[in-house]
Image 1 (cartoon, rainbow, N blue to C red):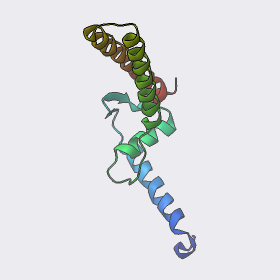
Image 2 (image 1 turned 60 degrees about the vertical axis):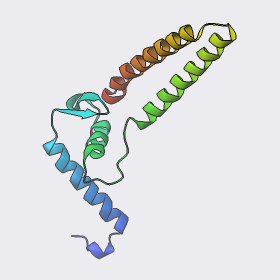
Image 3 (image 1 turned 135 degrees about the vertical axis):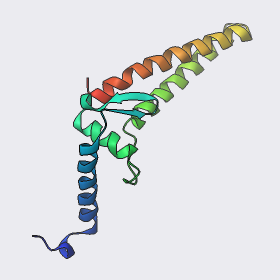
Image 4 (image 1 turned 180 degrees about the vertical axis):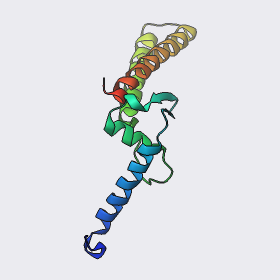
Length: 125
């Protein structure tokens, strides 16, 4: 058996995290709600399942949201598309009502499209 004094604090922390993840996997529910999504854990990749379990566990400090990168990219693209549409509509002299209706419609459409991409990321498809 390895002498615990010879193991670095970082390695000890990694071992504790791994042991906690194994415990979470054993007790994992079939479904998990994360950021408004109902996720079937059995369909997730192993890495994504571990990331989701760590993220939702109050005992793993500093766990990263596994969907954060995707959400940030989606938000950036949605904002860019809405800005571009607004510029074009204003330049063409559309009324304020037409502008507002178009912006709401395009934002809703893009958010729906983004929501459809999240299961592909979660389930590795």
